[in-house]
Image (cartoon, rainbow, N blue to C red):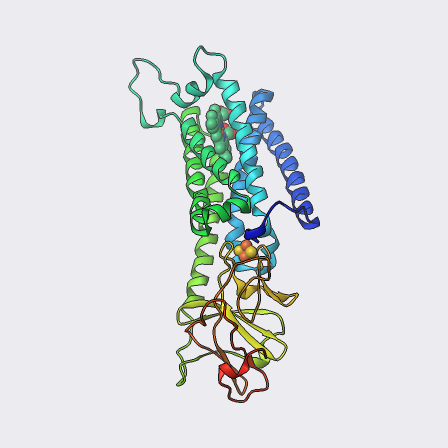
Length: 359
Ligand code: HEM
Ligand code: FES
């Protein structure tokens, strides 16, 4: 985790992920170049390459934006999320190659600096410009700047340096980049004539992304509102003990907070449900090697005190748990940070949480 994170370790799963990205990108480039040649038989090889690069970048951008809500809707898709940053960096490289090709092809032969020419647009002297004459390439350029910032800060070193909330805000700019790319393409189409296939593909893509985000949001909201009121002793009933699988997390809502419940043998533990890394859902994780393990990138926390195992220093709050008959109750008030917490004990009939330490 972040404190002693020194370098990227290329695990077999990361290598497989990158291999799939590489093959997917190569296939998409070939398919889009072929489609481009069929749609516009007069296009030069350079134009086909620059379009295939841009379409592949845009397709990857859609995949990246779809992975978040898809993984929320179906945890089996979580492996896609693990190394989403690799997808982001690949998409930036494709966007950069497209921009470089476009600048070289459309702006390198004039007497102006190619970059200045690309950003200034093709203003025709003496003609009253319409809004559709606005230069569309600066929009692509701005998108590229955002994608660069995201790719350059994607390593966990930057996450640690900037802090999770700044890093997350920076990476949420991907939605701004998406809007800029849509505007870049729409204005480009408005200026160069109708491109029915591209327009339809972008509209379908935007509609699918909006629908996915909406469904995932509504599901989360329903879950967040689903918490039960506390019982007489102030603890909230959250689950039946007999229904908790050993070592498997259960996301719960207590007092409006997202928490994560774990049964480990005879003991039941509860920790705050939001991972300190990038806000992953700890309740969808499992206990591996004695530690609660986040399903997104594998950060770990001890169930007893919420601390990451040494040498790491991240901590999540733990919550008092009690078990009465078959019912597991959790207190909405967290234990002091990094103190060993009481665990609800399987064998207890009616237990005071403080007597269950170490159970
Ligand atoms: C400095 C940055 C950029 C420049 C100078 C630039 C330039 C251009 C140019 C000149 C075209 C028209 C090509 C044609 O008529 O065939 C174009 C189209 C396009 N660009 Fe960019 N672009 C930039 C950034 C981006 C980025 C970052 C993306 C996506 C991630 C992107 C996606 C597209 C797409 C999808 C098209 C439509 C291709 C088509 O006409 O079929 N561009 N861009
Ligand atoms: S969000 Fe990355 S490990 Fe939890």
